[in-house]
Amino acid sequence: MITDEQITKFQEIYKKQYNKDISREEAYESAQNLLGLVELLYDQYIIDKKRKLRLEKEPKGFHLEGQGYTCHICGNSTSDEDTWYDKYGIKCMTCQRAIDKKIIPASVAKNEDSWYSKYDLESRFNIDRYAMSRFIKAGILKPRIIRNENGSPHAYLFLIKDNKDVLPPKKLTESQLVVETKDDKEWHRHEPWYKFVDPYEHLKGYKIMDYLHSGKKEAN
Ligand SMILES: [Zn+2]
Image (cartoon, rainbow, N blue to C red):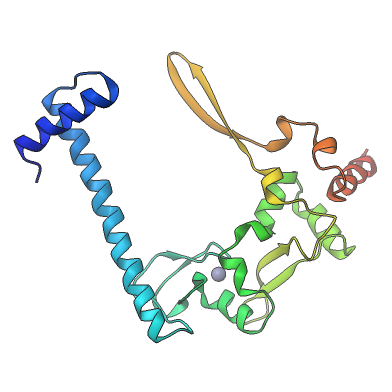
């Protein structure tokens, strides 16, 4: 609960910070939101702390209890016995088995800048799935394939170190936030990187652009 005194304090701090008065209701609501955020962060902090302590005793890792975790590798939702937590973070068991079998390095869970997913390639280079399978078949793009227990593909990871000289560092292909003011309102949206630069100049020396280019020529 927030006391009257705290609301007054919040009004004072707000005035100092922004040189603007806010009503008691606004101060109450802002303080309430802030408190909610702090509680959320604190809860998460305690959860993390507990996991790390347990990891000291069980360094290989363990299943997490509960529903709705997100695998840091395939991005799928995972729960209870299907989760695995270790110093690299949360993974589903399908991805964890691929790590155990050395199909992918464990570090991919922590370092998402070291690889592109299929979705990353689709969204950042506008590659459709037909072109993608053509590139894979031709050996131009080299994926590590995580498989389900029945052998079907679960996820494709294109490690930058496997695709040297073809795929650029991910920071060169991040989308950018565009802020537009329309009807006195601010609109935010993400635009792909190639709308802001000359893509061939920007990714000079990375073969992916040559292949995209030749692919388009063929299509014409
Ligand atoms: Zn996974």
